[in-house]
Image 1: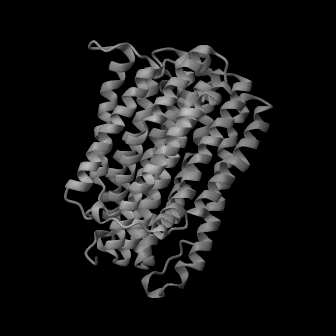
Image 2 (image 1 turned 180 degrees about the vertical axis):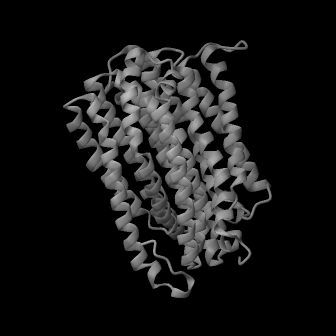
Image 3 (image 1 turned 45 degrees about the horizontal axis):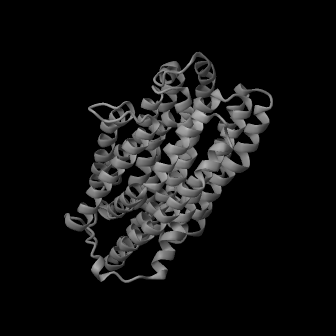
Amino acid sequence: MKSNKMGIMPIPALILSMSLPAIISMMVQALYNFVDSLFVARVGEEALKAVSLAFPIQLVLIACFVGLGIGINSAVSRKLGEGDYKTAVNIAEHGYILAGVLYILVAILGIFFVDDFFRWFTDDPLVLEYGISYARIILIFSFGRIFAQAGMSILQGSGEMKKPMKAQLIGAITNIILDPIMIFGLFGFPELGVTGAAIATVTAQFTSMIYVFYTLFRGKNYLKLDLNNFKYSSGIAKNIILVGLPAAIMQGLVAIMLTVLNKTLSNIDETSVAVLGIYYRLQSLVFMPVFGISQGTMPVIGFNFGSKNKKRIIDAMKFSGMMAFMYMMLGFFIFQVFTENLLMMFKSSQQMVDIGLIAFKRISLMFPLVAVTIVISTSFQGMGKAHYSMVVTFVRQIIVLLPLASWLGSYSLDTLWYAFLIAEAVGLVLALYYFRKVYKNTLHVWPEVLCRTNLV
């Protein structure tokens, strides 16, 4: 265990080597929704509205597999840091059992609750038809994405980042190829429209799952899974859930926030719902690389938390924070300067452009703040203290953003967008407060010889 790169490799080289594959993986993940929307926009504005309304449902799915993945990743990396290889393998195997339970819950959601969800927003029959069909397929056939993510998190927790990247690439390339074929009916396939986009997505996710299964059970990996010797432990399952649940709730809060925000916007101007949908597709291309940096950093923090190496934890946070901030500044520049170009990628109407020019410029003011918040949240998750991240997200998006957006929206739609910036500023202050608390109560009591820092 002393030879594991997460404990000995220089931090800059380690974070870069682990983050770059994760960045590519997260960018590829963002392409799923982005490519769907890009092609769906060619079907018509009703189709784009339907997919935009479906986005919170997709966020619920993302919340499920991200929460499970973080729970697995953090638990595996911490056990490896402690030198307990056998328990790390058992944790990985428990991850797949929990993934199966999770899929059943998501499928039930897709069968029974999709219709009522869409009817809450609109009575447009075309939007209802598109949205219900798209969301139901995505949820009922979500097993590919859930099982693939569980496997990728196992690999990432052991320090293996390239194979998860390959799995994401396989899925993305499959999705990009199938989207136009299924949507527009090319090469003899029937023209399925929005339904075709959903079928292309779940098929692509299934291909990723097959690759991950083969890699985990047949490939050469640091962790070797063998379900024949699996022994269930309620303690291990509880540990995965306790770390992963706050992360899942964090993502779920985003779905709640976006659902309520869509309702607020639909009461002001339904076109603004489509604009916000475009924004979130584009935002994912900015945020996902930062989440990739976080995924590459989290097992490093978890491993060194397990081995009580304070210096490497702080160094990892500093370096990943610098990378995240620089990338977010690039995203900020693009959203400020090329706003109209971004909107026209989706064949936006003039009304959508008029709304989007103001919305994009004002919302993107928060990007530099988000970079720091994400890195701090990653440190909480890596150290097994994800509940702090959950509280920050809840305060930022539910306590601050939604009431503020409703209040500012009562003045004008243009004013509403400032709520995003104010909410992120509050979230950053709270995240810094909690990190100072963790540092004083946990890291500070470790041997002082390991690290001296003026970070806090």
